[in-house]
Length: 379
Image 1 (cartoon, helix red, strand yellow):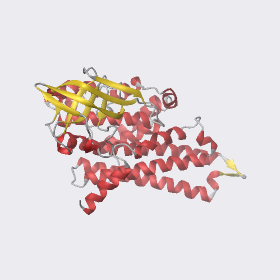
Image 2: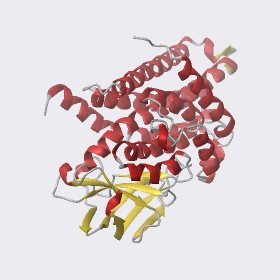
Image 3: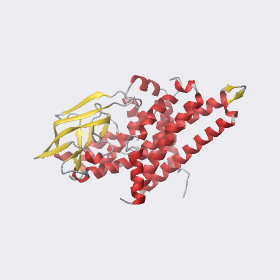
Image 4: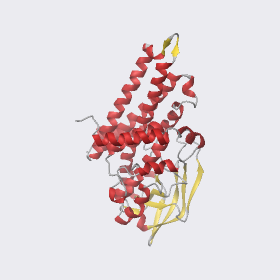
């Protein structure tokens, strides 16, 4: 049991931290305010290997482990959780194609995804199917060499901008076993998009409904076999939960550092805030929760890398704990800054807005509790 990062891990941790500090942090506030999707910065991240972190190297991926990826995402999110989270989603889709795609699908889609010449979106949620993902209604009917796709996906990160949409759709009967996964290019006839959503946070990535009206998708774009879609989607989410948990670590760490600097410089009643024991206790609890969350995330990543039979539970535990702790740490940091925390001159309010959704997406934290309880208590 070794709690130290390896020399290689420390090297790409430094690379991610330097990139985040130089190419993301100076622009994050402007991206948020202007709702800018920073394509140039994303492609620069891809040039460092961050767009295909655990995609195999023969198609342009970096070939790292899930543990390695959590180290990278923590660093990126310390600068801009919203942009880091989009990179996480893009990685999740790329891995699904790499893991379940045919040789032709891998060589067709993945080189451009690994360079972020193309962007990717994950399409599971629907207007009437959120936590009950297996109840989705989007349907694909096979007609010779084509699937005719009809339905609507909601809250899709990258919606309207991404070039590839991996869509979970119903090809069979009710329930999880009737769901398949299709890779749908943006130029597919019958594919359109809803309005861009106005959101509390995550403003550096577009979010929109993705609409299929007799969309014609080549049958060769089926990932895996018919009926494999729900399994593919859930396996993708195991890694996605780790990544979004790591993004919460990065955002929380950034807020903790801002709070620390403020406490060491701000004076009230003739004393620095850092000299008040009540505030010391609060800060100590924030730091302890952050460290505990990081340990849970890295432990869960290790179980996923080893295909541990309890990996799904550990990923759910880590996602639940780290995203709750991350938001709480940001909120406490805002309180420590007082009025300064509430204004946009400081990054805390932006990070807090970005981290709030981490408790909802990739499976709500209530669903994480369901997964954990089922594993421990049985059906």
